[in-house]
Amino acid sequence: MPLTERRTLAEITGGDGRPDAASDLGYARFDHDYPTDLLDAVLARGRELRAAAGTDRPRFLGLDHLRRVQDSIAEVAELVHDEKRLHHLSELAGVELEPYPIRTSCSGINFYRPGQRPIEFHRDGPAFVELVPLHVDGAQQGGSTVVFRGPPDVGRRRLRAGEEFGPDELLRIPQRAGASVLLQGRMLFHSAETLTDGHRVTLVLSLRSAAEPWKDSNTLGRLLNDDAPEDVEDDWRRDVETRRLPALREHLLS
Image 1 (tube, one colour):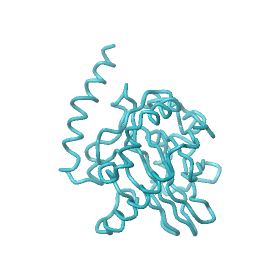
Image 2: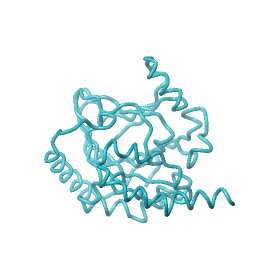
Image 3: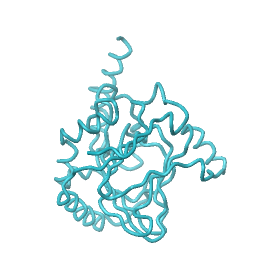
């Protein structure tokens, strides 16, 4: 899968993110080889599920999305666990990656529409996400992920103070059909470009470092902004007790 671009955290924000970062990666863009018929099936089923979901509640960060789609779309589950894909993404990240174990956050489908503010500036909960556009159209060809070129905490403080970012303070990462973006979104303050006349539907596959699973910002409180307690509590507790804390203890004692 040919690499188009790779940029480090230091190149984007001016700092390497240590000790919180799981690797030096900011993002990598590459042409994927995922089967077209598989992605078309994900798109069709995702649109059906979104239509059936309705708009019965506010969405965290203003994002229009479906969660836990690996449980409802078999082709997504296939991608989540594809060993070739995981090996390639691990090489790009510089660390071994594993699928995200909390099922409600393991995968999702995001929907971007003309004139609709897509999502607030934020940092991700999982350490890494792979963004796979399933459909793009319009003059902006699906638009871009927009990243603040500085420390995330600085960007958050400035927005809360009512400031705006200048054009030279923002980095734009194109989201194009046939390509993927691997993003260490937990370490980047980012949003998405508002589309003027087009649409984008993006498959989001969450990952984390297999060796350092504690580098994760999905607290139970954050998850409950999107999920019902009964849908997430057992997964979160099991992960903390069997993976995150034991791995952190071993790291601290080594």
